[in-house]
Amino acid sequence: MSKETMIKSLRSSLAVLCKRNKDGGQIKTVSVFTAYFFMINYVVGTGFLGIPFSFFHSGVLAGVLTLLAISAVSCVTAIWTVEAMARVQALETDKTEEQTSLDSNEVVPLLDSPKFEVVLGRKFEPTELCQVLFGKHVKRLYIIILTVYCFLVGWGFATVAGSAWASNIPFNTPSLRQCAFNDFNGRLTPADPTCLHSYMLCVAIFGALMIVLAIPDLTEQKIIQLILGILRFVVMLCMILYSLVRLIQTRGISPNDCHDISPSVNTTQNHSSHLISTMFGFNGVGWLTAVPVFVYSQIIHQGIPSLTAPIRSKGRLHHFFMTIYGSTFLSYSLLGLFVALYWEAQTQETSTLNWVCLTEDHNVGLQILAYFIVIFPSLDVISAYPLNVVTIANNLYQVIFGRDADNDRGKKAYIIKLSLRLVCSILPLIPALFVANLVSVLQYAGLLGFSNCYLFPLLFQIGSQYKCLKTFGPTKSSEESSKRSHFYRSWWLTWKNKSYWTPYSSFYSHPIVVVVVGVLCAVLFLLTVASIPVSHLIHPAIK
Image (cartoon, rainbow, N blue to C red; front, side):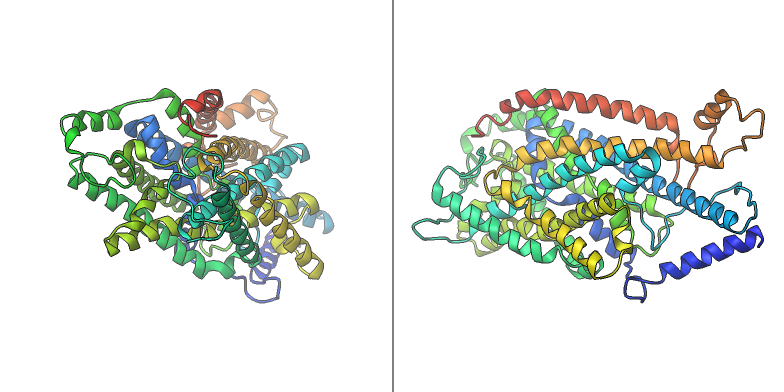
């Protein structure tokens, strides 16, 4: 059997495999347009709710610039993950070809130009990338960090739903009441037992709904994901336009409290300088505590394999992620800018709660707008919670059984996967019953997000480049390539080294750029950790 015949046979087998799903039919795929909203629902989640609060306390301009930097780096590290997936796919193909040659008792030379691609029907979860590139110990470390992170994310989703529903459902019993505007402001949980009971009931209702929705596969949720993804942008646009219109109407004068939505005539002389201070001021402690919130709002990395797997056309995934992060940066910046400038000191930690007071307004139009803004994010996390559950369940399955969850079939595999999803759905709900402060959850989730968003993609990038250069680089029989110095010169100084350069690579893929970004992220992480002991200066009322 010739080399060309074996390669054609291998690729034909892969093509047949990719055309089959677990029921023996066509693989369920989605278009790039639908996948865009899958990604948006995953990356936005509850992160946008804390952006205005963080903008106000760090300084609006400083917040915009920091968010721009974090968005750019997050986009690059997302593309690094895609590159690593393509390289590991090439390594797996090479290993399969080598095994085929051994079975046929023929020697097949290594390909000079390996084909780097993310193929349909085969995905590499981050846990598998860790196993292939670094071994089982790094894989275990990753799954521990990912589990805790996803746990915090689910916790954040539940607090958003519980607080929004408890503030708007008219409970009226001896043990339950509708929560007021300030019941959640600056507190870990509502102080009033009747409001707390209402909140806990709402979290339980949300949890029951999430357990049901976490069972279907992602492709079976595409209509829900598409509708809620569009509505997510609509609610942010409503918040932006309302705040902008009120800024113009009040000439930049912020309300004194939730119910004071009229200009304060006694502050007309000072409001311009106050606006300038809010816009261009800088609070070091506020900025440091805002960084993990910004990081959290742009994390998608642990879900990239699962979310890109159904996409039919994968040739431009790098451009796809640039579009994702461009969209989120623009919408986050406008939201943080106008909401923080209008509400200023009244900006709530969960920003949609600023509109709770308008649900009692005499203007029916404002009432409808307020209810839409306050209620919708709690409904919208319905689209994000199952994505979070699927991500952690798939990674746990790969760690436990060493196989891709989507490729395992049969009744036993289905029961195991269903059990993992149920467990991953229920666990985050338990602490959410007792801690309802979103910003506190986002801060620690954002710190862990540094690992998912920056550390591991960096390791995947460097590790996959190194392994591909060792596998596909110059043959070891070459005298020059046997020198270690030549190996590292080839790696670090060669532009577009064909041994690891993928269709998704660009200047950001060069090892020197990877190291520089890694050092900057490490410094930012250490500064953020150092800010935690003084974060009470920004949240003095949390009890």
